[in-house]
Amino acid sequence: MGKSLTYEEFAENLNTKFRTSADGADGASVIDLDLAEVSELKLSAKQEQFSVLFRGPRDRFLGQGTRSLEHDKLGQAELFLVPVREDAEGYYYEAVFNRFRK
Image (cartoon, rainbow, N blue to C red; front, side):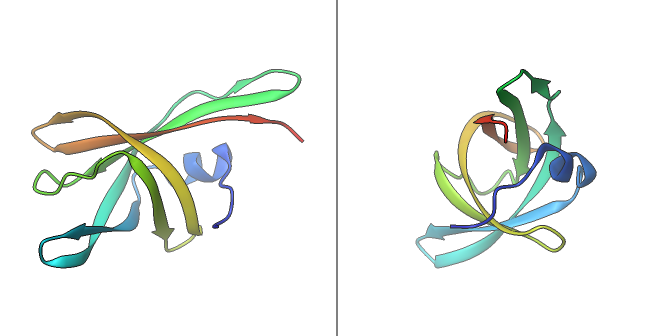
């Protein structure tokens, strides 16, 4: 399992590329996902909540599931991605974080 990325790390790397693989008829291929949005951070005494939105290519759809993502600066992490919409620029995938604060 990869590292647990923080809100601050995502916010500092907005509009950068993450890589993942997708299995297809032609075997596994690398797909670039752009970190398109980072939601507002909601903090309570015991929890933190935020979400991130990735934009993938229009010609490759990724289904819902856990993906291994790699980033040049942040390294590797495992995220559960859910497809949430599509437009002329591509497909969008969301990862939601709702975790206890240390």
